[in-house]
Length: 418
Image (cartoon, rainbow, N blue to C red; front, side, top):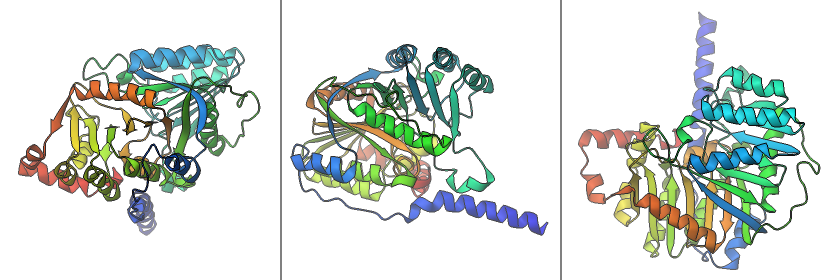
């Protein structure tokens, strides 16, 4: 009995330390020193914050599953040398079958196919899909599977969504492999999301991000021309692939976002499936409004996959709404988009949500594009989503029922753990 009690106590302690670790992070402040169109901003983003910003890229936006999945599957089916695929959500269903079949067919054709699935995110994937791929020659690994000796890493998930084909074509964004992402967000059972097809030199950075987790998981270093071919210009966009993880500097994504917010002088448009900003980020958004920046946020409404996070989010809106931040709730279905457009010049898209789980606990990857044309295109997508959203005023937020306010305020206190 005594030994059992000790074991349970140790387990609880390990889980508590794991979950509460983010509470001890230092809150940081980034001062506004230069605007987004100042060369110093790009120097900071490319030298101080992340990988080099490279020219010659082409990034195409894909809206909802009807555009996203055909493009991804076409790229896989056209692979000649390598396919690398890392994702958080992979569930059973027709689209999961289609991806498994496409990956398996390429492996049987002699293509080197490597698939990295998050252990938590793929728990609803049937074993027969895994076996189908493995028997065809696909190398499949699970990221941070549950083991007694790695409980401290249980909360560190790979939330990245990366597909790289032949080292030349990359995909990233917010989509998971599950029925909810199919269709065109036509009803509450089909989610709204964006994904992006990428060509050009920045694809090598995407490959590097994927291979870092592959090496850590499989103990296998993949390199050579099959994985890193010489890449020529594919367009005129400047871009960088920004990644973060607790093991490699967990706050780098947060610092990147704060730097972009504090550089804004005109507009910030945020799309976030889970909008639970910490105090430093809320302060940065409020300071931006005080500088005259128009700040707009779209986040899920009543259709959400986690009501707990929505309530925690709403518990933090008071100071933002009072300062003039415009917060809108998407109405038709679950809103799973993740993106930030700053001053119509810099766009950041990928897997990162606007919460502390993404900023401090998960492995995340965002593509930063420094191009006015792409920012304009994504602003049009944002405006279309805005038209299907309902703005929440400070008066409406303040007037919600007392029971709801108490729930939201209580949950907001634990926002960093959600």
